[in-house]
Image 1 (cartoon, rainbow, N blue to C red):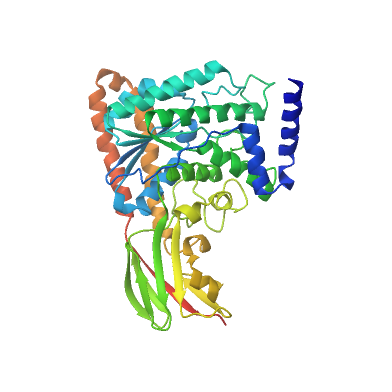
Image 2: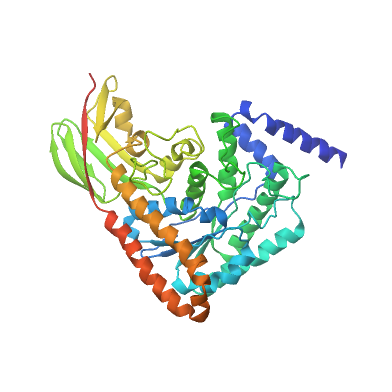
Length: 449
């Protein structure tokens, strides 16, 4: 027992020095502390054309931030799949709570795919106990089986992390490490459930844990990936969560490819993009697929979405800051420009919309990711309008489920309320479809002065 205590103290001391550790050392220290089970990776794309996605979870889901990122992404980045989305977040909820309401609130809308994200409240903000794990396992398994019985495919989501012991916990002797080790145990149970039930898995916990360790090195100890209260993240933490779910869906992130033969003034484009004209290094393109945009022009995005030029990309309220913590752009958001007939020893100016960047010939031959290089780009305004429509619809979905479905009218005639609220929701869903329109944009490539 003494030897185990010494070992744990040594590991904790090592973790305390993460600011001086390299990323591989950080990952190894975390693995030793948390003993994570190996998470299953999707073997193929789990989404199907026409899917109706249900995003289920507690107050973190009810924040309508990672769910917005997911719906924005599915709407504009993979429009050919024609996926519709609903969010079912409920503050304070545990897995047994959703199990009790899922037939009335969720299954009535006939989802074909569902993501779950429980465990934060289930872990009771304390050190792990067997009864906590047993309750979580039983309720989560029952949720998966109830979905499967109705033909719904499932992605079992792991809980996130805590950044500090939240002020509302009564167990003041339990540390942040105690709480996160508890959440890590629930993550491992989720993997067991996913394997046993043959469903998907989204490793939210490990993505957030490793991103948090990296953030403390890159941005300093004041960066709160899990949120100021230690539980409810800002936009950065929600981007990491969305990354985990989108990866769990098996998405690969090839938004588009523009291949240019500069001397011949030719451009070859991947599906979803059409060349309108080409003249002296200037290419006009019409795109029906967008890259994901990490910020929106002022006044155009939905409530609280980061504003280009106003948000600080080194803070936890910025999506752009999270792009340094997880490979979102590299793995999910690639709009690649490759240019032939350029010289390695020369620099070239690439102008895209109102912004310009300079690249070497070698960089352009290898390919540059326009989505990563141009935070504000010709898609920003159109993307912001889609996000605003998504935000409005998801806000109504909270009202529909939490208020209208619990009203005296619903107690008297639930089916009538469900039908009426669906009629009210439909224009909001239609507004998303109307906002998503092809974007015509101009790409100019020339020698740098």
